[in-house]
Image 1 (tube, rainbow, N blue to C red):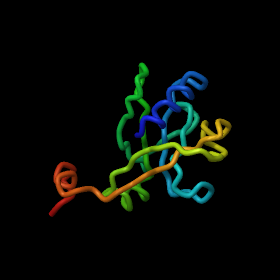
Image 2: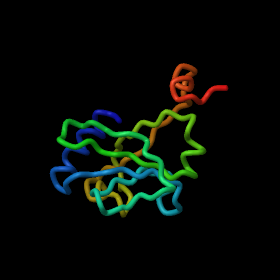
Image 3: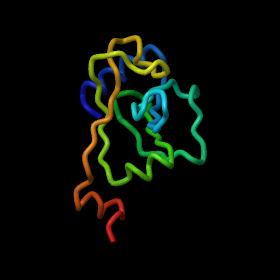
Length: 119
């Protein structure tokens, strides 16, 4: 994540309590990362835990992606960023005048090796 995204996440956590992200390929907001208070979005067996974001709070912010979307993105380095604009209606940053976005690039050879994604 970027420093700007981390700062917004700290502010949002102060307002909403512990947060989590879910990255889906849904219809409403395309591939926007959705940020929810923990417990407001339930993950299931078809979701993949991508990792935890340390933003300087007591609890890390967990990041999940749908299994189907993970199959498309598993060769991709994902960075959560924030830009000015109206966020998704279901994501907690919506009223702030900012929105979370995904910046991505293909994994480099060493990263592919580290994740066991090379032949």
